[in-house]
Length: 590
Image (cartoon, rainbow, N blue to C red; front, side, top):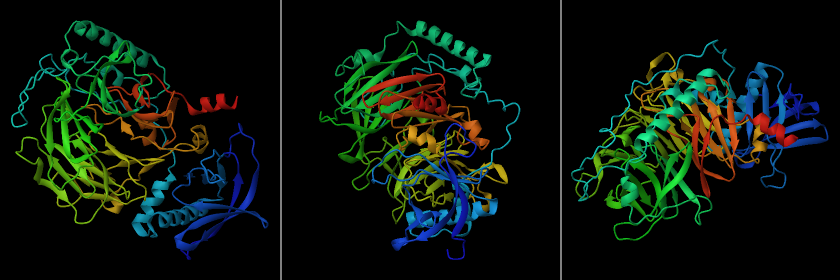
């Protein structure tokens, strides 16, 4: 690191350059990189010979690099050691050469603080791309037409599979739970901009409402099997203030109903007059009639069942039949293999008759097949590492390709299971990966870390028709990743602390490219405009403040304008446009 410049000149300001809404003083400063014991580093900002501000370079520091503005900005740490709200500071660097030298030094110090090692070569180039906000790409006059799904609306017969499942137990499958099935074909034709407000968008909303009313009328007198057969359940008139806080949210696809978990209870939520209302609640007990709090809950087998885990039984899965409202099968993986979580063996497998699911733990990925006698882990579909890569999250594409993240920040792409090795390995940023989502075709992989999201384009730079799931990506074939953060001035609006919930694309079967990305932090829902992100506009997001802390949030299937939000003690359906952060800031300042 001695070969790199360690002292830089810049202009320090308490306001973003060009922002006239906030009064602030600017002054020239000298910025020096200081190395301390145990591979620690800090920035020493010299205001004058007698005044120096120290900024520790650590994973806890909120910072931005803006290439177009030659700007480095950060939120100063709370001097009391707490999480107090502080205003951001900005340093303007004099030229491109100084900007890139400063960025290089900063990245090397930060990665050494995270990993204990200094990145070099291709890894250093990759990390510089991750941490520097790209220049905006000129937006075309007319946005490209959104692909139209050719998926036919399911017939009445296709909505009621009524299929037995040999080899999965003695319980016979009845017709799955029926609810009103709504589709949102017209919404995909709406303008992608969250604030366009044009006639096409209004027409889409009207068509959506008409379709909902027609189908609701068609099904309003139909007997729902889940209502009549949940003998152990009870009607729940309100979700407000349950005694136990909500912990998980599951969004249905086939039958357009959702589920919220609170303690040992699962509540079925129905959509009624554009509102989300509790329908039925059921207490969760295993085959021995012992109650437990389910976790890692997923829909399965044409949305007719819920798979879930019990934290006390890490090698078991439980299947709840939604037609009878109780657990009917327990699957023992084997005696020595714990499960961290499960995912469908392809992105929309839950909407079809289904057997296998994919599971993982800290050092292995494998299939589970309930048709097997005895233990359900498929030995031939198991990839186990001799070391411990600390796998933490997983997602599948429509083709069944896998993206796997780790606590160490590594991202592996697999073409299928079993696999002798990952097809592509992306360098780690050093932060634990909390969740992964993929676009339908696998071109885009969305990574959730604690206070930022990472968007990977897996297509090869010189061959966009091929992606990193099927072909190894060398350093020179990788696309520059995009790091999605909130503006520093908005972090103060959100309480000074960012903890993102698992981010999701608004994917829909038959449509490869999403239009929005959804996550939340604290009491705020946050939605990014995906098309704007592709153009390099990484701060094109809108937000909505909710009445309590958000536990989980997801798009209602088939729409990017309807969002289901699980709060600690309530569940809400947000519709329409969210708010510009600037408008909320203006109100706060007023």
